[in-house]
Amino acid sequence: MRADRRHFIKQTLAASLMPALTGITAWGGGSGSAIGATVPTPTTRTWQMGFAATPTRPDVPTLLHGMDLWSQRAELLIIHEAPPWKDLLGGVSPEAILTRDKVQLVQYARSKGLKLVFMHDLTNGLDRSAEEPTLLATGHSLTEAAVQQIYRGYALTVARMLKPEYMGLAAETNLTRSLAPALVYAAVVQAANACAADLRSAAYGGVVFCSVQVDTAWGAFALGNKSFVGIATDLRDFAFVQMWGLSSYPYFSYAQPEDIPADYYSRLLSGVKVPAMVTEGGWTSGAVGSIQSSPDAQARYIQRHAQLLDSINAKGVIQLMYADLDLSRWPSPQPPNLPLFAQLGLVDKNFAAKAGLAQWDKLFARTRVV
Image 1 (spheres, rainbow, N blue to C red):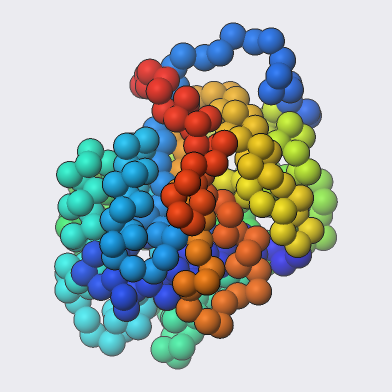
Image 2 (cartoon, one colour):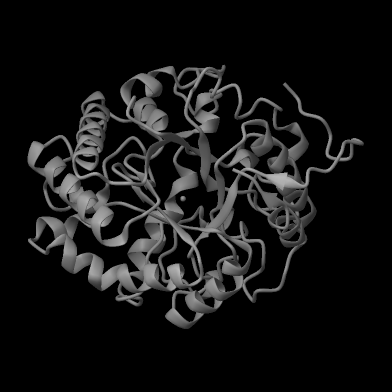
């Protein structure tokens, strides 16, 4: 399987849905103890819970209906996407872009009491070995100082207009470093660090972060290395972070949720003095391709994941999708690996609950402590 397969949803959704949803769309993509062991059930959680506003079908009514449902069991909305390079490089102002594409959705989310996580993705979410396709299509590269300046200006405008509580400046930095040309990774480091300085100068009041891919840190997708590699380089290269984002799709690496090591997160963060949030991830409920899963396995993952979140006093956890994708309603051609992600939802394409939803709701019912 390709190392980039976990990331296409964020890019596919943005490209496919933006024309239909203009004016309101935004989104983004050691063995542990057994679940059945007799241990006290925690009644509190440190972590906020949230989703991306990914609709099962690409239309505004479905998006809003889904959001009405999942916002009852969430505290966070994430928008995870590449900068709108075509418009930005074509001379459209960041203010105009955000007014057209983001402001209404964010206002709707705020009306439901949701906090905003905004992740700027600087490389290709479909293929971390490459740059973002819409940027390359303009004939430009992130390695150019002028392009980095445009990104920085857009991020400052997002901070001013949308006021996200959490601002991500680069995604899956370790996977990018493992797969991308050195010049591209260096550009990510330079752009993100400069953007962080801009945000400090502008007195941005939110939490600034970058994310790492957890399975890559364990060696699963690191080229030429199958053992634990950690994130020491990321800690050094992105020293400005106030929180680390974690990208986690362990069903690609482990057959059962109970196989996920108890230190799956904590080993990465040993000695790290800032908190962490799972900013994307999940476990499929369906058997597809080489993946063998089920609704029961997904429900057990929700339980297992809570143990892992508790182990690091996580700040938050974001489930990539609330509802499964209705592939029959998605535009063609569809990426051949789309079915691997289509059943990540906690409800099916008709919003019927799966077993995992009840487990999520049990966790949401815990008293959140800071």
